[in-house]
Image: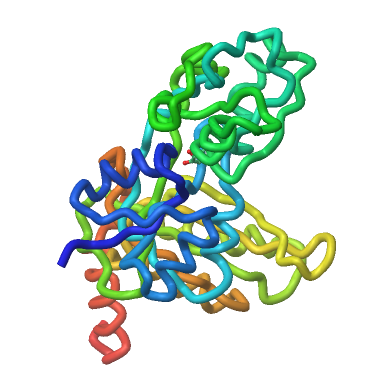
Length: 307
Ligand SMILES: O=C(O)C(=O)Cc1ccccc1
């Protein structure tokens, strides 16, 4: 039976492009937003979902971080780094001076800031559920929007003209997408893996975050992302997202996570999965699997009085 994956639709989003690379044979279920895509995976309407997690210019896609932290647990099983290029798409015949209202996903607004300031300084820019949703809307005859910022492919799909190409502030922008599914067996360690988790503070005190970070530091686990997100319980209340190098099956990562578990209110494991860039961690002396095994053997010996 082919896999069915939900994603941030409609057809023509960057998310769809990511899904096609991550799972070329999967059946695709376009959803109106990230929450709907993850809920489809949670409810079993799909076997999983592909959603954007962060991009190299603007940072986190916070809706994804928050969705993964709350609600029914989902596990990340794969990631993909997708270069993103933005096009300015219009109904055929529209030219630049006639563009008063631009529609696109918030991540595209922040990544095309210079172009918008330079070429369309007076245009109102409105947030859309996705880039392709914006293109689809602009293609409808009575649309209040004059242009969409979206991938070129969305322009082709919805019959729009490409008025300007590659309008991102940087031409090396990359978005990280993840494939998530309901909890099950983890991918095997590959030697170049990433582990994602969220941790909730037990109590607020000086050094609380430092204590969490120390659990990684003392075991030689490098972090690749750390994010604080509000818990919603009032100003100043935060929880933390971590991406760490390595797989939970490895001693140094596993022990860091159990250390974190001991001092946190709650730790939600979000998965261990192969890194898209294939980079293996540089292990510091004394932090390899055999080092941990040797130390455990030593401890067992001295506990048995064999000194
Ligand atoms: O709206 C899309 O096409 C997405 O997949 C989300 C997004 C938007 C802008 C940059 C990267 C991802």
